[in-house]
Amino acid sequence: MADEFIPYSRQEISDADIAAVTNLLRSDFLTQGPKGAEFEQAFAERHKVSHAIGVSNATAALHIGCLAMDIGPGSLVWTSPNSFVSSANCAIFCGAQVDFVDTDPVTRNMSLEGLTAKLEAADKAGKLPDVVIPVDFSGLPCDLAEMRALADRYGFRILEDASHATGASYKGDPIGSAHADATVFSFHAVKIVTTAEGGMIVTQDDALAERLRLLRSHGVTRDDSLMQRASEGGWYYEMVDLGWNYRLTDLQSALGLSQMARMDEWRNAREARADRYDALLADGPFRRPARFNDRVSSWHLYAVELTEAARIGRTEMFAAMREAKIGVNVHYIPIHTQPFYEKLGFRREQFPNSVAYYDHAMSIPLFPAMSDAQQDRVVETMLKLAA
Image 1 (cartoon, rainbow, N blue to C red):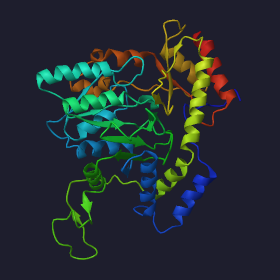
Image 2 (cartoon, rainbow, N blue to C red):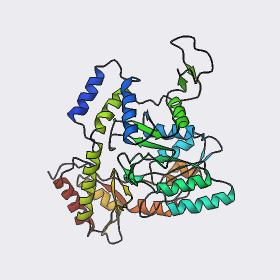
Image 3 (spheres, helix red, strand yellow):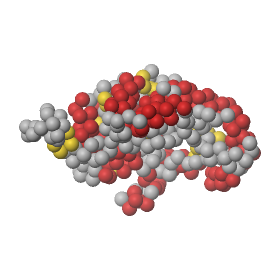
Image 4 (cartoon, rainbow, N blue to C red):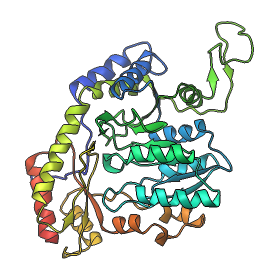
């Protein structure tokens, strides 16, 4: 229908999902029961990793990821300006200093060339980063193999922000299975798999996983091998580190576990929509997302950039699309341009590629249940306005 609002994304909840949650509600555990461990095991197996640690959201995962990598006052963390603020805030939470590496104009991810040059300069200045947080924007994996080589050369750790990239793959393997020291996923309502809110951090590192589990649950343990005193009885626990209440509930895990059964189906549906957008927008004044042979996007977003050939600018286009009841969005306002980060000394012109992308960017509707008619309406409206 012409007057129907088309959102930029939409979760998909099936009868199986509802049954999974209902069954959990009738069980003995709503939180800290067996379903959380079951979800973690399934996610770890799917992503070919030794450990998957469920948390309350991806921001929490980034926070404890930094902490587990010993980020604190005096530490330096680099990330991409083209992301949500959590990708940088997680380091600030730890008292660390943040800096940014500008984006690549094609991938919209952290520039490999920019990272290489910045590391060379930082090495000479004696100010290398302790952790680099590359962001798989829109679900497209970063240049992870090359970044791993740089990490090994310069001695930093990689905390990959794959919040957009559940279901993506790189060089034939699932995201998170290699290259990064730890990888963060998001299960927010509009992500590929949802638990309403929630996240996961995966790693191959046993020691890192042990610390992550402590940090997500108050720093409290019942594991005799981690305790500093002899147990006083079956009730006994010890707080051996300063942690947070960042646990994922069994209720959320039941939903996530059910949703995982359709993860590949949904990613394929998103890719089919992206393919169709590529064809329908081919002659329009829009720069479309890049494709690469060595990586497969999860297609969390389909973001276009208005070119100089467009009859109107992005601001006018955005308003007109919303007026037409098409839920476009903009991802993202560059982090370094936010007032908080300006107070830290960052200037808009420092990272020109991320700003140039932001000034022309618009995310258009993309979700698995989207119909041809809805997609046609999005494209027809875009072409009528801009071409």
